[in-house]
Length: 162
Image 1 (spheres, rainbow, N blue to C red):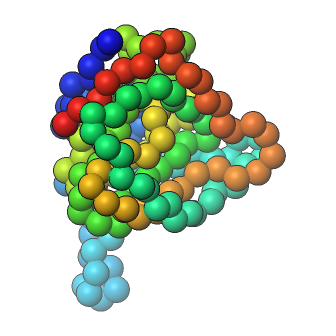
Image 2: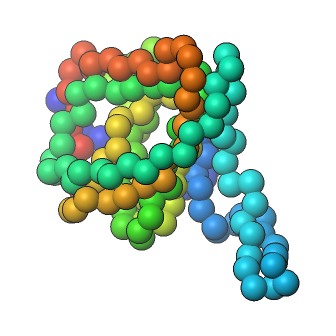
């Protein structure tokens, strides 16, 4: 059985799969007479294919027990899907690219807490992987007509450990 090694989540490492949503290195400027900072254009939200619309949701992720077996992945062919944590606690991200789903293409990342991810359209990814206790996320994705969720079981499970 293959075991995935956790990599730190960086913009460069995650670029083939979408965007890392974080303040570090972001374009920012003062607004509201200097009482706030705007961190601008942090992700490419892609939700309008085939008449779709942008949804803003709140998810509560249940903690996973480690080691965890990755047995399935999902993708969204009609839009991106962004996860923005509401707390500064690390969570795990598993991706597999946009091509054929296979174990050899899987990569696993651990966030630094206050980092979000935006999975690009058609990127295979595992559903939310929260550690230690229930955590809340703002999720921005696509609503509307059309099939925007494809789930597939892996040919063999993959182990994920901290």
